[in-house]
Amino acid sequence: MKKSSVILLVAMVCLSSHVISQEKETEKDSGTFEFQPNPLVDDWNKWLVGEWEGQAESDAGTAKFTIEVDFGLNGQFLLMKSESKLTELSDKQRQYLKDTLNASDEDIERYQNSTFRELKTYTIDPKTGEVIGYLFDSMRCIAEGRGKRQGNKEIIEWEWSGNAQGVTSVTVIEKINDDKFTLNHKYVLPNGSKMEDKTEITRVKTVEKGR
Image (cartoon, rainbow, N blue to C red):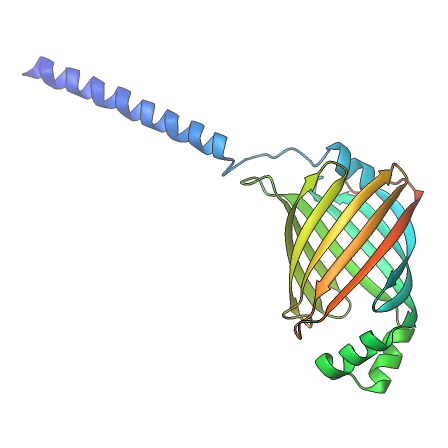
């Protein structure tokens, strides 16, 4: 009887070890947890690091802007800061600001004369491999995006909140060469109307500071 108990105990220990080993392998394969993820040192993210400039032409109007991209938080995130100033506001955008955001003529004039600022952070979801993005801007708009890379393109779908509650959008970054890319935004506003802009952006210089 004693010998049988010992054999049973050994069998249970072996089985438990096998189950634990299987759980660890499943966890590793599924990407549910990575204790020390590698920095975002892939070619796409390294290419984007630097300073860029361009002029947006859109349904909202035209604007000149600059973009600064760098790594942050030990290279786990890509930080994209941009500043822009309207050179012209379209009638469609003016009407949207009045009807949807209840903006007065004074509000719109102040908006036209101010510098618009935006901060985006990007990383990779360890579970799915998707690109994750978070956006905050000086209009107190917030957005969370998810997407993927396809060849020389990165496509992100955004859900907006804050002052842009109910807006959805799609952003496509397309690499033309090492020093040029296009940025295309398509928005669907809460009232169902759509807006779009497409911009060609040129590198000013390469920087790499915040790793």
